[in-house]
Length: 317
Image (cartoon, rainbow, N blue to C red):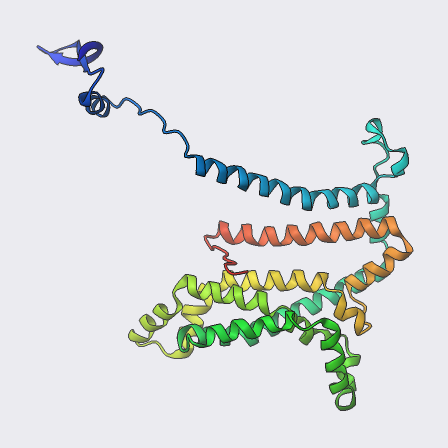
């Protein structure tokens, strides 16, 4: 034990420097270190944790390359007017222009197809929430045994290919209701079925995160009726999950091509395919812009909800 570090104390009304006891070895050293607040030595990282960190960052790097490289290739083809064979290190920043995108935006057919897809997305979100929200609430609050059944049923549309769904539905409804298949909104039931895995899991995760059964029992014990419980307790707490489900469904509708192509409907994806065959560079610029705007829209919605204190959970997706 040694006395080497001064500290301030009061003696006879005046402040004087007093030595601070410092223990340099033994069990007392650890106690003295805690007493004077000396920082402990940093523990070396465990080998298993270090390997896990390397694996995690390697995986994130591979995923980033997997997603970024195709986007960069699309951007180079769409906005740079330099052939690949003439592209060198000195030409990476030469020949970039927004003219292909401006030419694509000047097409009136683009805005007609975009308006059709927006209406289809709105109708699909409304239909999926109207069908699955009551079922998810009943399964969570009244009949938990139905949850595995609903989870399996909502996954069935991904087992059946779109061509089988379209052929089966067309063969059934064409003699009975031909007006149904001739309408553009005939795509809404197909989109709603195709979006069921995303919508149900977002709603189910939201119900479990807020403790829906506990909330309902507490509200009913205070005398609230069933409609009041649904409108004043459950729905306000499920807004983030409903927004998440709506955002995922909208993204699916804006990018779905198989159903619209098989039923010969003019939507944004089918228009992009046809336009790209005619104007390859402008079509690629338009496709990349739609992709970035969709990702930006989803990110903005999530950010706004978090700024309002509403967390968005997509657990289970």
